[in-house]
Length: 332
Image (cartoon, rainbow, N blue to C red):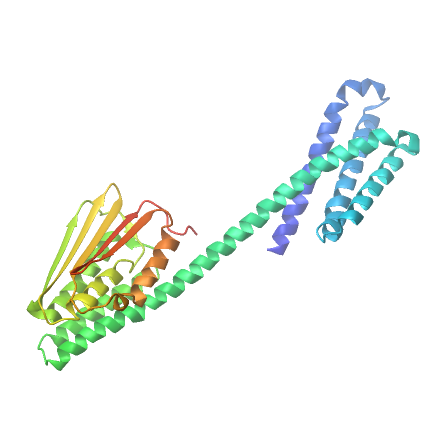
C-alpha cells in the first residue's frame, strides 16, 4: 500500500509539472517573437516551471509535514516567507525585482496548498470510511456468530423435550434439525440469501416446533406478495419467531397462538409476529440475546431503511418490522 502511495504521488507531481509547464508556455505564446529562438522560449518556460514546482515541493514535502502538521505555526510562517524571498531573489538576482516574483509565488503556493489539502482530506476520508466499513464487518461477523449457538440452544431444547416424552417422532425431528443447521451454516458465510430460502427456513422451524408443542399452540404462517428475486441478510427474522415460541407457547401449558404474516409491497418486506402472552410473564423476560442482536444488525445493515415496532400488551406481544430490501447491504 505504501508503494502504491509513492507511485501515485510521483504520477500526480509529474502531471502537475507538465500542467504548469503547459500553462506557462501558453501564457507566453504571444511574446514568443521576443525570444531569439524556440529553444530559448521553451527554456524560459521550463525555468519558471522549475521555480514554481520547486517551491511547491519544498512547501509540501518539508515545510508542511515538519512544521505545519506539528502545529509549529509561527515557525512555519517565517520559513514560508523566507523561502519565498529566497526563491524570488534567485530568480531575479536582485532584491529590487523580487516583489513581482514574490507575489506570483505566493499566489501559486496558495493554489497548490488548496489542492494539496483537498487531496489529503479525500485520502483521510476514504481511509476513515474503510476503517468504519471494516469495523461494521467485524461487528456483523461477531453478531452472526452469536446467532448460531443461540438458535441451536433453542432447537436442542425442543428435541430434548420430545426425547423425554419418548416420542417416536424424535429421530425425524433430529434429521429436520440437521437440515436447519445445514442451512444456517451455509447462509452464515453469505452477506445475503434469497428471501424465499429464509422464509422456507422459518416454515421448517415452525413445523419442528409444532410437533413439540402438540395441540396446545395454533401456528399461522401467511405469505403474500412477489419475493422471488429479493434478498435479505440471513437469520435476521428467526429471532422474532424464536422469542414468540419461547416466551409465548413454551412458557405456558394453556392454549396459545402464534400468527406470523409476511407481505411484500414494492420490494418492502412487512414482517409481523403476534403471539399470546401468559398472564404471569414479566417484561424483563422478553429481553433476550436474540432481540438485542437483531436490533443491532438491523441498525448496521439497514440504517434509515427499516422500522421496528414492538408492542408489549397485556395479552398479546406484537412485532412489526418493515425493511426496504432494495437497499444494498454493507457494500464491499
